[in-house]
Length: 341
Image (tube, rainbow, N blue to C red; front, top):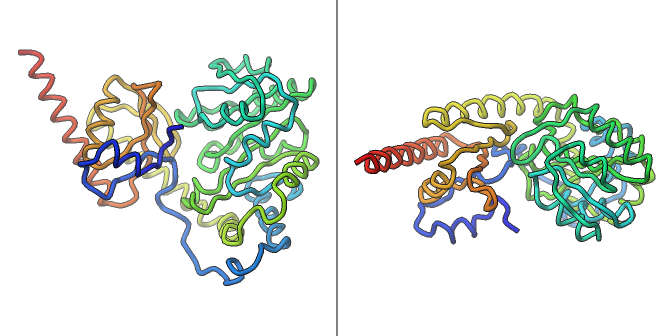
C-alpha cells in the first residue's frame, strides 16, 4: 500500500532528481524532540515493568485520560489497529473517508466487512465505526458531542467507535475524546512519533476503559515497548513547555507555507499545522514538477487532484521549495501561452 515517507519510492519515480530529497510527503514534525543520551540499561536490559508504568502515567496526564489504567502503550499505533478492530465480533465496519487507508485494511484483517462512507450519520449503522479526527489528509474535525452521541449509540448494541487522534496534538484538543474512554464502547488512538518528530521510535497508545485496555495489553504481551522508546516517551510527554512552544512554532510555519503556496496561486484547502491539504486541477503537474526538483509531496492515486504537503525543516528546504514552485509556475505559464497560439 502506498504511503508517504518512502525515499526509495521517490528515487524510483524521480531517478534524476537532485538529492537529498526534501521529503514533505509525511505529516511528521521536521523539528524533532531533542535527542538525549539514553541510559545504557535502555539497550542492555529488558524493559522494566516499572518504567512501562511510568510511561502510561505520564501519557495519561499528557492526553487527558482518566488514569494510567485506561492507557495501553504499544510499538506504534499501527500494530494496534487489527487488535482494536478484533475487540468486537466480526460484523460491518464503516470508515469515515476519505482517510488513512490502513484502518480499512486492519478491519478487514480482523474479519469485518468494510466500507468507506462520506456521511458521518451513516456510521450509526456500523458494528465498528472508525473516525480519524483531525482527519488525514484534509484536516476535517468532527465535533466532540457528535462523536460521543455516536459512541453511545453503538455501545448500546455492542458496537465500538474507534477515534484515531494521531494529529490531535496539533488539533482542537477540546474535541478530543481521551477523557471519555471510561464510558466503554470507545477506543481512542494516539500517536507519539508525529508531533514529537520521532517516528522511528515506534510508540503509540490506545485509550480505553480499563477492562478493554487490559485485554489489549495482554495481547501485546510483556516488553511490548522497547527501552529507548520508554525513555523518549516519558521525557517528551512530560515536557509540557516544549509541547507548548512547538505548537506555536508549527502554527507559524504552517501560515508561512500557506503564504508561499498562495504566491503561486495555490489555495490551501485544509489540513493541520503538521500538513497542508491541496486540492486543485493542477495537482498532478505540481507533484511531478516538484518531484523532478527533488521535493516529494504526498499524492493519492485515486484522487489525482489532491496533494498533501508537510513542513520544510530548514531554511535551505524552504528555499528549494520556493525555487521549485517558481519553476513549476513558469513552466505552467509558458504552456498556457503556447496553447493560446
